[in-house]
Image 1 (tube, one colour):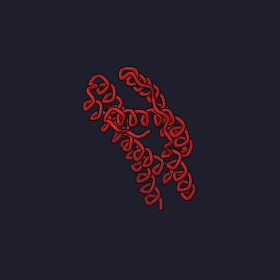
Image 2 (cartoon, helix red, strand yellow; image 1 turned 120 degrees about the vertical axis):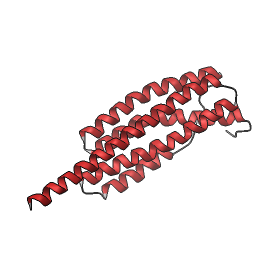
Image 3 (cartoon, rainbow, N blue to C red; image 1 turned 90 degrees about the vertical axis):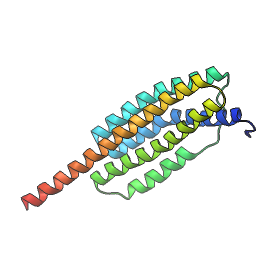
Image 4 (cartoon, rainbow, N blue to C red; image 1 turned 60 degrees about the vertical axis):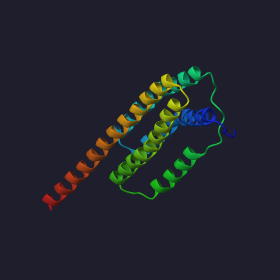
Length: 171
């Protein structure tokens, strides 16, 4: 679908974010399994739960603008998962695997943050201020997830450093 107007561009962007949100549960599940860490898995299960409320907000956005999501042919998430699997298979250390999974989570979430920031601006540009409010609440969820993930990364690294110090002390 070619976009000729700001509203059509907004519809494509909104459709893309909705499709990505729908698929994110699969990605979060795969990343959690790959991390092999109960804390990471719990964080991702919570993220998947929050994604369901984000999906409801996005559906409300479509309702408010009187449109339906458009069909897209994007493969960004599939490519992301393919590369993730390939790179993860090369990592042997459990701690390094956890760190890699968390880094990829942050990477993917920052991509979504950029999309939401653009959508909020597009909602304002097209005069859909109520839609902008809903999108900003979705953006806030993503920002909170990045912060929580950053803290989890710090925790993983601190534990690894403590393990290493413990081994050095014992030797």
